[in-house]
Length: 431
Image 1: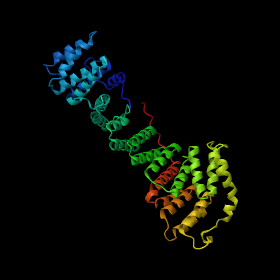
Image 2: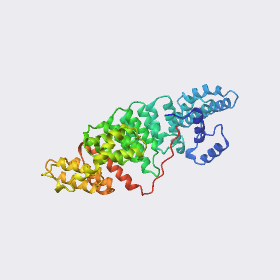
Image 3: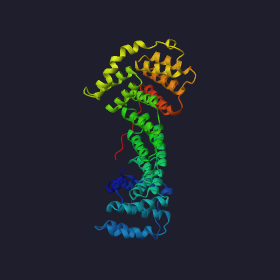
Image 4: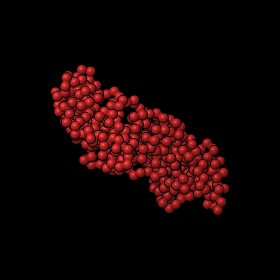
């Protein structure tokens, strides 16, 4: 994360304004207006006034650097509030002229410490103080100053990422991500949506922390705020890192990836097809590989075509004809797992009503895997477009499937929100 260059800082300080000691016309006019308020008038003590005049004279010469030791000596003394403020302003002005960031920082700190900095300048001055500390790698000082500026309403110059970075620079990942959470919540509560780059940056820092749980949390936040195949794919990948799932659960994850368009590579489609093939889900094998072909990810020369797709196509007709059309048609009593296996087959054939019926029949059997059943019912309803019914099933899912169910619920909320007026995202900050 970059901080302001010396030139940019000089411009920013000029924009923020300083005391009109070597006044530009507009600054002088502003100073006159301020003097109408007796409480805000700056009064230089008699003892200091000659030294201020000497400094101003030196600054006006062709060798303004001769004023630096005079200012440095003045700042080193114990001064009254108004005198310290004036000394700080002189340091800011000379530092800008000499491109001396250390002198500028001294001036800003002196101005702030004096307690006489105008209220409208406090946000910017605290930011500049933080920016100097950041550039000097004094991360704790930078954090304090940036927070003060932010609390006073300052929102320019990438302050939000800089605030968070002061923690990451110290390897304080949970604290830095907590700061990101605060920043994003504040931004979302305002009229402007945070830019996507903020979510990606927080996700990157969570990944860098080495904490799989933090990574999964922030990948999911990115997908929730800016849903896309990329963000959902990342959220799924992060979730997979945090849990050990069996073959059935892996297929459930792949179904979610298909729904969110986050199957992005030939390897993704191969994994899906091979997982479905192991369970003789021929309809699902054909559907996913044909989708991969349409997207140009599975070429005609890919071995999957001859070794997986072609055999699955040959099985479709006979397999579908052999299936029981309703749970009562299952030979014998039919265990819970048998019923749910039939449900999986009907799901692959996109007969979502029959899939739901068989999942529900499986749930009614002794020893039923409640979470598998509800995950299957929710997926069938989601594929069918009945999002309200899908959500009702996903909220019942717990255990190792809970993170996937939560992602489904987030996705459902996004589909419902698509018709609502969108809040314009903030402009991407310059870096």
